[in-house]
Image (cartoon, rainbow, N blue to C red; front, side, top):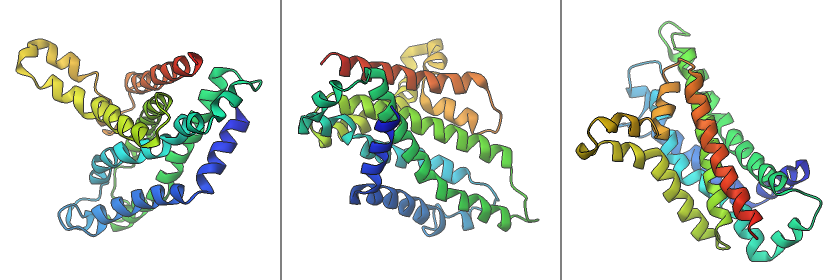
Length: 240
């Protein structure tokens, strides 16, 4: 599993695509938070990073499938998946190795954004007038959300041998999990069941962690999404 992890990370970081994906994310977030006046933190008037944590999941909808799309699709297209399956590796080791690499790359992409926290910390009046607990909870939620998107993207990559199709399926599946369920909860026909449907959405649990109150139920729920998507991926790989 460690060998799979290292190989995936090395393949991503030695390719132009890897740096383009990371660069696009950081550039897009940087422009939205510091340049465009409608979303600029400098015009926000408060020493907090809530605009960043509100925008980041929507950028993740495209960033994470771009990272995961080649995980299994490229292996199937090149015929190397069968070769991997003949190695002394279990299906779970293969899936977890690739998932760990994708999640690590997502967290690595988030690492430079800590500069935003330092900047807001210094811009506070007085200096340090920022809710650090809220920021920490939001980063935890964003990291877990990235893991959930990575697991979903890994599953969609295992469904096809075309990276573009895997990317589009990944974006659609992540969109359903983050936006679609909450939108469904808004239907009047659901009545009193709307609340319970809304609680199933990834955005609800992510927003809860972003309030700075660490609730184990939110963490477990996001981890459950990861576990379910990984189980489906393992089932798909094992079915071959």
